[in-house]
Length: 312
Ligand SMILES: Nc1ncnc2c1ncn2[C@@H]1O[C@H](COP(=O)(O)OP(=O)(O)OP(=O)(O)O)[C@@H](O)[C@H]1O
Ligand SMILES: [Mg+2]
Image 1 (cartoon, helix red, strand yellow):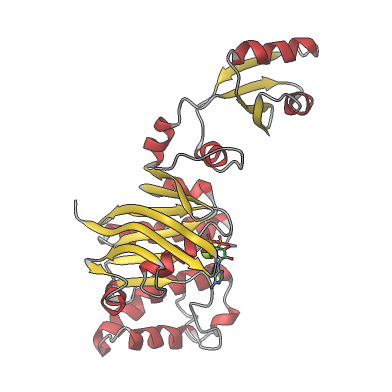
Image 2 (cartoon, rainbow, N blue to C red):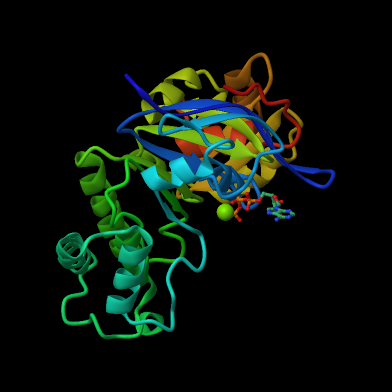
C-alpha cells in the first residue's frame, strides 16, 4: 500500500518547551486515522506541521509525496484542512463562505457550481444558503467547514476536532460524512478527545505530552494490551468496594461502571488479593472476572504519570 504520510522524528519546540517530541508514524493512503489525546497532547501542532502551516524544529515529514517542510505549497495543493478554530468566516453567509473557499482553491465556475450543490446537500443547508454563518448551530457550521475544506477534492483531509462540542446525533452524521469522503478515496486524519470515536477509525494514534504512546488498529491495540492486569468485580456495593480498593497500594487504578468496579491489580496473585479484601470487609456477593481492556482503559493505562510508557 502506498503511503499518504510518513513522519520520522518529527519535533516541534516552542522556546524550551517541546510540544511534539520526536514522533514517527506512517499513514497508508485511503485510511481513516484518528489522533487521540487530552488537551495539550500535541495533536493540533502535529496536524499544522503536516499541513505545511508550521515548520518543525527537526525531523522529516512526507505528505502526499512531498517533503512538507521543503514544499509546503505543494502539500497544501493536495490537502484539505479544517482547523480547530475559525475555519469559516462567521460574518459571511453560507453561500459566501463556499464561494470564498472555491476561490481560494481555484475552482472553475462549473466546478464551483457542482461542489456548491454538494456542500449544501451534505451539510443539510438547503434553503439556508443566505444565513449568516454565525447564526448556524455548531453542528451545521462544522459540516459546512468540512464541505469547504474538501471543495477541491483533496487526496488527504485533516480535520482538527471536528466533533468537539456537538451532540451525539450530529456527531454520527459527521462521521457518516467522513465515511463518504473515505469511500471516495481520500485519506482522512481526524483529531478527537473522544475515545468512542476511535471505533470509527481504521487506525488510531494515541498521543500524550507530545509523544505517541499507542499506534495501531482498534482491534490490534486491544489484542496487544489484552494481558493488562485488569479485573472486573460485579458487586451490589460498588462504591464501598471502590473506596476500599483505592487504599490498597497494589491497585494502581480503579473506576466504577454501574455495578462493576474495574481495577488494575499489580501484584503476584491478583485474584487471591482481591478476594482477601472482599472477605475481610464482609462483601460476600461478588463476581470477579479478568476484563478485556477497552480503548479507554488502555489510554488511561498508557498515560498514567507513574509509568514509563513504552510507545509504538
Ligand atoms: N504557538 C505556541 N506557542 C507556545 N506553545 C504552544 C503553541 N502552540 C501550542 N503550544 C503548546 O503546545 C502544547 C500542544 O498544543 P496542541 O495545541 O498541539 O495540543 P492539542 O493536543 O491539539 O490540544 P487540544 O486537545 O487542547 O486541542 C500545549 O501545551 C500548548 O500550550
Ligand atoms: Mg488541538
